[in-house]
Structures are given as C-alpha cells and as structure tokens.
Length: 498
Image (tube, rainbow, N blue to C red; front, side, top):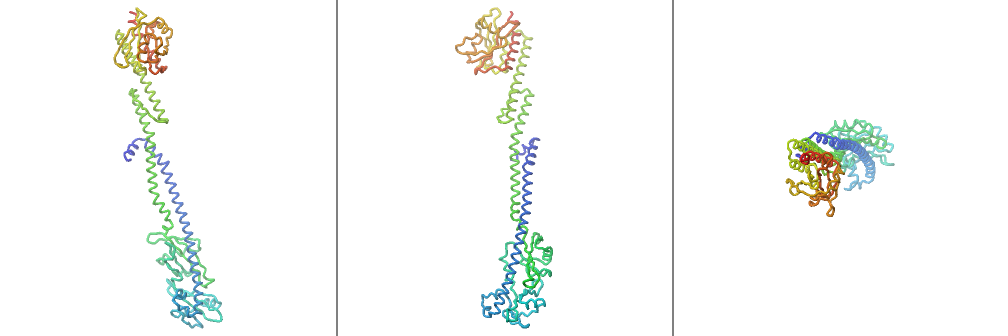
C-alpha cells in the first residue's frame, strides 16, 4: 500500500487527482459528520435538560406527598397510642420524635419531647386548622418539624420531627447519575443534598433559578454538570417558604450517545480516508497509466520507432486513442519505409546498372511497407515480349531471391496496357491466369493486386501483391505500389531497352 502510494504521488497528475478526491469526498464527509455531531450534542443536551427538569418536578412532588402523608400518620398516631408502638407502625418509619402539645405542655408519644415555640404566623395557621412545617437547628442540615392540629373537640397539636430518609427518600432509589438538592426559597437555607456539593457550588447553582425554565452548568473535579430546578409550592399548604428542588447530572451522562458517536467518528474518518486513497489510486491508475503509455509511445514515434504497439484493451476513450496511435504508427512506419525504399532505389539507380540488385531491394522493402503475403516483380523480355521473368522471395524463405521464366500472352499484356491504374484480380484453381500470377496460385493466394510497370507509355512488366485471405488493397498501399513500380520502371529501363 505504501509503495503503491509512493509511486502514485510521484507524478503531478496523480497528486492533483488525490487532492481532487480528498476535496470532493473526504472534506464533505468530515463536514457532514462534524455538523451531525454538533447538532446531536445540542439535541441531546436539550432533551437531557428537559428530562432533568421533569425529574426535579417528580422529586419535588414526591416530597410534598410525603409531607401530606406524614400529617395523616401523626394525627392517626395521636388517637391510637397502642398502634404507634407496633414495630411496623408507620409512625416509627416516619418520625424520629412525636409529641402532643396542649396549652404549651408536650406529651411524648415517640422519642424526646417536642415543645418548640412556633412563630405567630404558624400559631395562627394551627388555630385555623392548617398544618405547619417548621425548620430548626443547623442551617446546613436543619431539622424538619411538622405540626398538625388535632380535630375538634381536641385543642392540642401533634408535632413530629420527620426522619430524613423518609422525607427525602433513599439514595439508592434516585435516578441514575442524578443528584438532588432542596433549598428554601428566599432564605437560601439548604435542606438536603444527595451528593457531596460544597456551599460555594450550591450557592452558584441556586442563584440563576429565578424561574423553572432556566438551567445552569457547574464544574466539579474537572467534570461539567448540568442543573435544572423545580419550585415546589409550600406556603398555601404548610405555611412555609417554597422549596426549590435542584436536579443535577453530569453532562457526559447526557452526551453518552454523542460521545459514543465521537469515539466511532475517528475510525470512520480514517476508513473514509483510506477508501478515498484506495479509490484515488485505483482510478488514477486508469487515467495516469494510459497517459504515461501514450506519452512514451509518442516519444517512440519521435525516435522513429514504428514497430512498437500500445495494444490498449480498453472500452473507453483511452482505448480509442491507443488504437488511433497504433494505426498512426503503423501508417507512419510504412510511409517512412516507403520513402526510405524509394530513396535507396534512387541512390542505387544512380550508382549501378545492375537491375537485379534493384529488384532484390524492391522485394525486400515491399514486405515492410505493404501487408501482402507474396510479392512478385515481372519484367517482359525486350527482345521477346511473349516471355517474361518473374522475381520473388518465397514465403518460407523471405531472405532469399528467386526468378522464374514463363510465357506471357499478348492478351494479358494488352490488359495491363489498358488498365494503367492497377487492378484487382481473383485467383482460383480453375481460372485462366496470366503467367506472372502462376506463382501466386502455387503459394495458395486467393487474390492479387496488379500494378503495371510502365516506361514511356510502354508496359514493360507488372508488380503483383498476393493475399491469402482475399482482402483488398487500401488506397495508400496502391499509391506506394505505384510509386515503387515507377521506380522499378526507371531502374530497368536501360536493361529493358538493350
């Protein structure tokens, strides 16, 4: 993977493709994931605060209901002295002390005597038959007393000190990762806290809650907590200031799902980056490798290397371009070979009178510039036009040079004279062919293209290209064959005249 990546980023095009893939695939994915995480965090915090507010309300209502039940238990215990002594009596589970106060004199029903003086406002409520809650003792952990008037004709008041575990409920029944604190509104007197929170933090938490719709955050031991409050109305029922219930939860508890998503975020991003790199390398190879091959082939053509082929087997534009370059290389190669042959023939004509050497060169070069299986050169004898010499290189030994003599009918010479532009002739077993095509039939050719060799308007021979599959000659091949026939005519003109 590392080696492939190193080779991949070695070219400018590859680096640009990589940057393009990263910008188009990785960055949008990262942006979407970041926005999703941000929105999820905000939504989870909002939902967590709503649940926290509902929990604070539920806890406050539970405390209120316990106070109402405690008043009924106290009155029942005052009229059932034997029942309150039972081990499973409600009074024992509700009050740590219980007394009946008549004319300022307490009568103990349970625990130590309770004869605390009540404020004038509390005495008025008791006189009107309404219960009263009184807070006594340490401001950090005050005692909660509940006084309930006895029904007529009794003029006494039953006073009980509530057991904290009963009033605030056991800690093991609280919601998970949730702490509650209760303070008296106005006086900021803290009545109870289920968690260990110091006074400074409690004070900072209590200040913002002017309404139950507000929330606050605070930090303990480096961990952020969120708090919501619920105001439990107490004055109308118990003649005391309202109690504010503050419910707190660690922010991490509310963001547990978001944190889990965050832990999965990095592996997903890493996987996305690896996939982007893999797809980039894979796709860039489909682009860069053919481009590199095309560039190398173009340099090869510039070096006059016309034999190498790309052979790109692709069903796309690169495949079409590769096929076009191969065709261009093939065409240029034949054109260069034709020009080289013509140049060598011209040079040989100027330097020698040996017609045989010229014919040998023509046969050798023709095999390089035309795709014919068999190539023959036929020259009519000047002193006996009914006889001719056909020169050829056998397919089984293309480097050799052979010659045969044969008869040529006047009609066949006439056909060549009438068709100066070359013609296509079919070769079959039973066809009557000119003598210069007899060798083509012996080699199994099915068709031949014949180009007359003309010197000063006189046909002195023929150039024949034989094909085994019967394919036709292209216009380019016809033109080259005609040019070579003209050069051969010039080369053999003097020998033909002699």
